[in-house]
Image 1 (tube, rainbow, N blue to C red):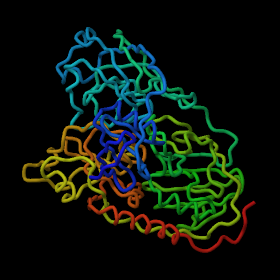
Image 2: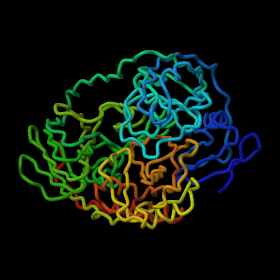
Image 3: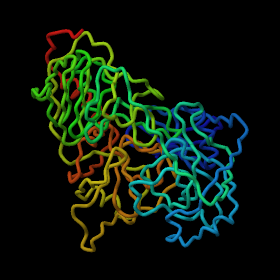
Image 4: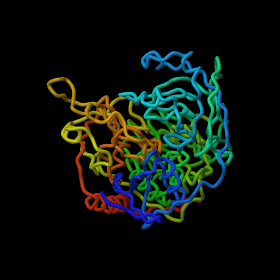
Length: 514
């Protein structure tokens, strides 16, 4: 653990959050964390920490709140499904005084961490095993805070009720209804309407039409940075290596947007373009199968078909150029940013053809089960880290882009691994894709690209950035092992990943596409 000075002369302890992020521990709670985070672009304040992704400032500034707090009244129906298990009754909650403060945002876009719960509710812990899906509008408590889920998502908080307020609007600055420092009063009501999301209109006038989207079809680039304090995920391609290499193959910048797909997907080209499929799968044009990894030309009206067992990247020369939001064209499972999951009939715009393209793409074969990780940042119970790295895990079928859930392929004689010794929760702090959370139920979760910027389960270790692409290759039942490495080894792995991507393309496409 290191220390970093502040502009007030004192020092803050620092902890590694993987190989490219740092947690700063503050002593003054969430208000001090907010004051420091306001002076660092892209910083993510938590309950007792500030998370910084990228280079660490030599001195941490403190900037006071810019405005006076605003006041909000939100109607809540206290009929949550966790009331019986918590020994709570609706009438009891309706008699409480619900005057709270927005401490910080995170976990998902617009999700408020509300301080000032009634005393007997402030000790309710997170669930031992997070739910795969929490309904939009749920009012929940955990770890001393209340919160409202702006959209449906996985979550480990205890559900007390429902609220229909719209907390996040990507099209209207300042984007979030509730901001840190705002005061919130919950008003009990008999019922609230569901948070219905209107289906977006189809994308029109583009160069590449979605005929069949397969299991899941998304526009992805390298993701977004700097908006974690709003709760907006990084997102981006699950397999960064495949995205970067596929873009190089068709003549794009490595960061260009492409299509991440799974299952059987079909597209129709509305003009001539170069395409390549990166990842396990088969590519055909008008029913003629193309050699694996070969850059191919698709002409107007031709049908492009990709059959993919897990995930793969379909890149087009010129890149997908739908409008960027918060600095990226990536879709994610939490924020509701358009276009989201692509549907049959969507037409995507493709940029101008590049000057040159490569002929062939050769990606590494599917890697073995070992994921390299940096230990920490959280302290664990006795034997937990040894169990994590000493166990062969299997990918659970409930895994998705938000997180890879792991189940043990073998267990102790008692039928339980010693991971139940992990803390029930930690003060909510910044997390990044690759963070390995240990809920007290004992089933680790490796956070994926669509994870929220904040989490409250203990993070035992964080997969290094050079291995994150491998999360995108994992399928249910695959074996996973965790191996701890140093920051120096992680830096060497990043350099080697860059060399691997550069070596993955060869030859030059003989014809320029107009």
